[in-house]
Image 1 (cartoon, rainbow, N blue to C red):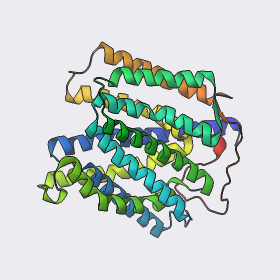
Image 2 (image 1 turned 180 degrees about the vertical axis):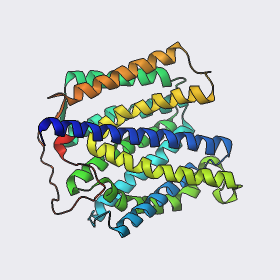
Image 3 (image 1 turned 90 degrees about the horizontal axis):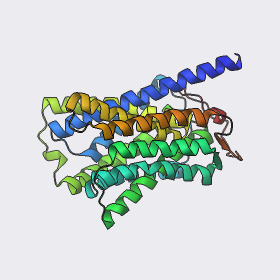
Amino acid sequence: MSSTGKAEKKAAIDAASWMFNVVTSVGIILVNKALMATYGFSFATTLTGLHFGTTTLLTSVLRWLGYIQPSHLPLSDLLKFVLFANFSIVGMNVSLMWNSVGFYQIAKLSMIPVSCFLEVVLDHVRYSRDTKLSILLVLIGVGVCTVTDVSVNAKGFIAALVAVWSTALQQYYVHFLQRKYSLGSFNLLGHTAPAQAASLLVLGPFMDYWLTNKRVDAYGYSMTSVLFIILSCSIAVGTNLSQFICIGRFTAVSFQVLGHMKTILVLILGFIFFGKEGLNLHVVFGMIIAIVGMVWYGNASSKPGGKERRSYSLPSTKSQKHDGLSESSDPDEKV
């Protein structure tokens, strides 16, 4: 295949991967909003455990059918990943409880510079001036349209700090493990989902009781709420998989930058479906700035020297096979 054909194929797969992530992420946000706001199921940590339990079931079936090939992930790396991932989930929930919405949004925005820092320090990545400026423009745009009241206290700041760093480390580790052990997205999920499901289903009810003062076993389940829980778990499988695919193809920083497109899309859908109270010139202006920044970032980071490793020396376990459903994991194809 010619270089032009390869580039077109890669661009098509990248676009499909990203759309898969956007659709599933926005879908699960809307379903969970209805589940929690309308039906009062406010047990976010337990629900996340159910999400990973469903993902575990799917990967087990696919492995049994032969679509996922056997692979190896050392226990030490698995435990590190689960630690980062669970601290991320709990940290985000606690941060939202203890902080204002404005400071919570600022904390989420700070994941981009933290992810950049991890790539610079751990992967020796160098960003061009245009790439840096485009990231700054995205931060400004999303900040303008999402950050409102900003107030913080000591315990809220600590919760946000834990949430930001653990999330950035978890997303970096997805990319790191896929490269180091030549693991496809389904294979990596097959290793991590069972451990996350088990730990969150044990921890979740206690954490949710602490956060909401309500017991998940005392919730008044109805046919409709159960159907919404099942729908949430089903969409979550796609969300979990698409996150691994996108980080594997793009790296954690690109995932964070482009991920704010989902924030903009959720705002737009919220205005369409739930009223236009928050829609004003200030918000629209922020959306336009953010979208311009995202387009600029995509263009700047893809140019030669836009984002490159100064010395790439990460060992890779070549003996493992990719699963049949995995995406390309060639480091040179990362954006």
